[in-house]
Image 1: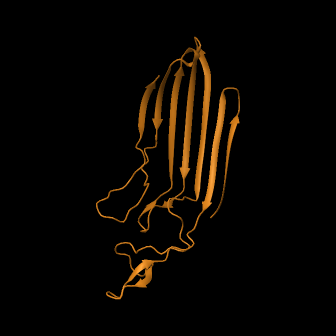
Image 2: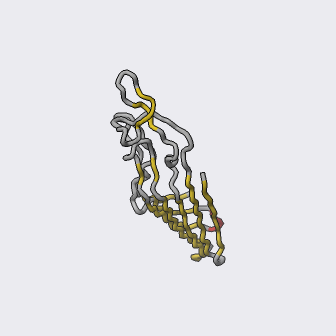
Image 3: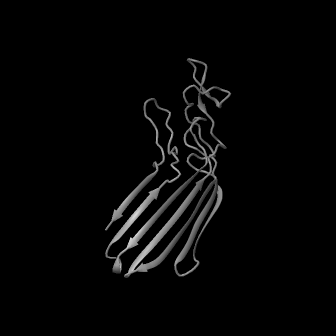
Length: 171
């Protein structure tokens, strides 16, 4: 695996914080020979350990293939703005975005997640001495469904990213 990562938090003003992180990962499999996926042909890499009964290979050589669930790039950027709004209360606004490049989620070629962007945001009002809080929260405002795992088994379904959501909280 070759890569790097960095992050920062910058207090731009007394009320404004900018933050971010980025990671690059070029992870590769060194040596791994799992079972061939259902229907995998020799042209698709099913070339190892011939079954004497069928004369067909049963394993695939994954050496050099990208690691699963390991996008080359992950980038996060966010900001928080906080300001007094009167009567001892504080208003806080946050905005966060994240990008992921594409990645493999399983052993079959169709188990692949395309690159994506997700956005989260919130508006909060804090009471005097932070004794109470009301918030409007939005998660995955781009409403992007993502694949979080792939399985080579019938009738197991699959995973997706959290759908777009909004909420209201209080304390």
